[in-house]
Image 1: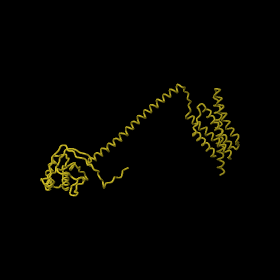
Image 2 (image 1 turned 135 degrees about the vertical axis):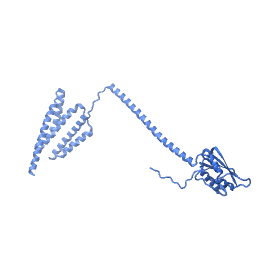
Image 3 (image 1 turned 90 degrees about the vertical axis):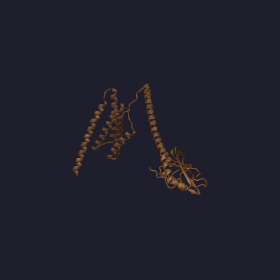
Image 4 (image 1 turned 45 degrees about the horizontal axis):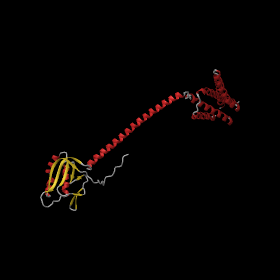
Length: 230
Length: 117
């Protein structure tokens, strides 16, 4: 087969292929001629418009539903986190708490020379209170939290870096069973210690006590933020 | 021998990609034209195998057959006679003839080459 003949055959084959393809397409999905008149067209247009309207309505409906879902999910998450945060704050002592409990007042045992309230005394008392299931404690208007420092500075006792005021010093303790706590305090070692230091502690139960919040920033020295989980 | 086949495939692809569609009323003409083109192609192959192929005859036959078939169908539509059936018949018979001749030629060539070897 020489070159010219090959070219001729190829050209004819190409045209034949084109014709075949067109024929295939025509028979598979033929072009239907639009024979509608103006009125029919108008009616059809109206119908299609109505359909579009319906579809738009449907889209809007589902969009609203989707928004609703998303919002409620977000809200739920935020609420849960808020709740957890509030719980943690309460536990850490950053909120005011109230409930039943006892009020312990520390006063000089004898008139005359003013005794000193050593931090060791208060610390022991607090430890003892905690041992007796005290929930929240505040000393002289200072909320006792986990990291509250009670120490002596220049001969004065400081709680939360605030010097304690003059007598009487009030210690408020919240407890589920105030009466029991009071009884325990009366018979406690601390009470004797206080007496030894020429101090007298008196306690009385209260039905409604309000403890102030810890109002200073909590400094976190050794904790680090955990790596965020992905 | 591969070039025409390739050209046929290219033509098919082009036709499908271009998405040309003719109105249904004219698809009859196109089908007859396709038949005429097929007939001419096979006639050309036969002539080539028999050794009496001529370019001019082939090309003119291709276009002339297509046009004639379409014109016959057109005339038939206007006369109220299914004249395109005549074209289909004629081309169909010739197509079968041509293919039969091609088959015989190919077979004889093949057996000859086998005898030689």
